[in-house]
Image 1 (tube, rainbow, N blue to C red):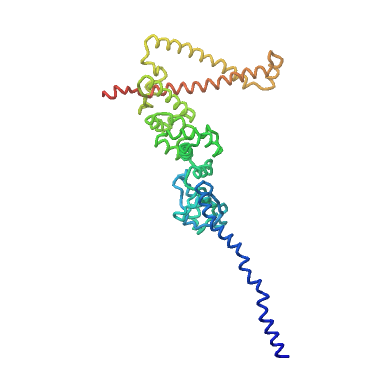
Image 2: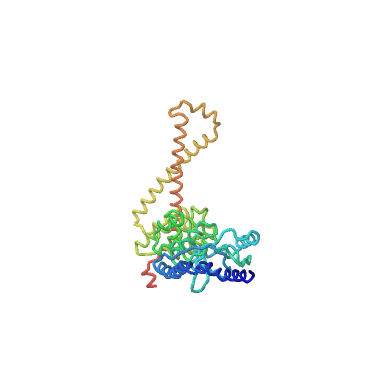
Length: 390
């Protein structure tokens, strides 16, 4: 029995593998998986085709080494506030990086180029962070789309200068974006975009003054319409404080531009004199700037019309006395005296309001006239032919 049992046991042991034989067929069951692998191996070829067609772009959120990130040489921002960078660096040391940057992967160098987040990257370097969280874009080359993303992120930041915005907008326009398309990208009006681009007409000295906040951006636009020579001389006057206000300076620049165009139409060009202040004092109120080349009859007409106009202006003193009386009278007394009169108190108030509106327009027109006179009194008209002969 022992032998039989042993034989039975041996027989069972011998037969067991035969019963488990189906389990050995498992590799055969994995053959479909091999087909899937083969299909997967074929996939890169399809991806390459897609990239050639422009469809191979993909995005990943990854943590990448800080020292493998390079600045985009076409970055629209050129100036960064060092104090602000160090302040952000201290925050990153304590709290880490709160917002990922955006980069594009360069397969040839196995490095990354910034698209958005240069301020964070610079601060991370100051904080000596070894890695950074980044949205990595694959299959994206250097082009107008990535530049547009960088512009859209930076425009409107307090530390981006008007000149940087202007250069960025101009670069997009040069890349075949229309002004309207640029305005949609950056969330600004088309007028704003064109206004900024116009600032590129400023001479280097004026652009530097604008970047350093020595020249207001609103005034800079008017200055940019002048010739380079007059821009430099106007800037000297502005820095010296020759103007009572920025609005006076704007009016002067506008008058100077108009005079430049007028002289250009006559075959000459107009240049501000270096002795501008002395010229204004020498001419005084009795001068007739810009009329020395007029016929005698025209000069006589101007003198006569000036006398009439000044006589009428002198009568403004009477209106001033009336307004002073109304301003000084007690409101209860005014109510007693004017209530029930033709038009009532409201009618009188409307008449004063009308005078106020006209006075505002008259003030603006006089400011322009004052600057026109000052421009003509403090400039030189140069005849190109005469200059060449000299």
